[in-house]
Image (tube, rainbow, N blue to C red; front, side, top):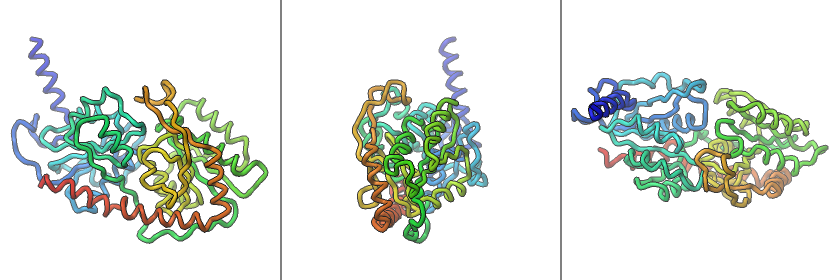
Length: 389
């Protein structure tokens, strides 16, 4: 009887494999048949979070390559405000391969969705130099991993046994290089974080400290906008508000806005400042660079692929252990503690030499177009998909 119960439980799991073709006899991998060539993208496609935008951008890169695809949404309660792919989500067509876009800690849940009748690939985001050992069985459920940055690629090669390929995170780029920034008036600096991505990792307190060190109180040549969103305990918000209130030149905008509104905030700034302790990719940094902004960011994690001394202002750091309980899955790992004095000096350099900042930003746009445009990433995806034909 115990054996029959186990089989019954297995059947119930197989029936809810959300990535299977909707009209397939379950379990679909038992009745044979061959799905048509193509790559479906699974992710938080309606969620207004970084992982959601990353998945939507992957869809656009797959489209740019001319590959057949069907977007498959994973509902994230309370975070489903982006409806740009609604007309395509829920299409009945399914294809021979599936790319699941998520953070590493979501792997066990994502593995339960898999259809065994397909080639299953995971596009992995992770912020630390190693992944938790307990994720090994979930990684093994996938056929391969794609990594958005060299940082994540190296982590995956060291952490699990599946094949790993670098597929740069695509970024939406204007067709023409942005005009050089106009630094008339106060230098406008933007920093951004989502409470859902962990305030301790995003480290907005360091951005505020670097701003105040670069431009002491009483000097009016700079402004700092702290843009945030997401859910958190009231204490974290109160602490941030109290810190910002010490300087009238600092404004906090705490709200979820549309992609167009966020793009307008980025467009209105001169400098994007991110003193993170680590990033898997750093989409905010890349989007600011795409708009011709000077980017000052910790020289650790995924941002190293596109923020260099030629394209931006990488900030020195020292390696420190992640404090116990500070970040999920971080036991025994480390990250960066940015040098606030170095970041402050870079902010002053930008203020004093805007022409040099403009040259770096324009070089950054060219690097993004070469490596992170929809066409470039789409070509890389098509190359990796070719054996499946």
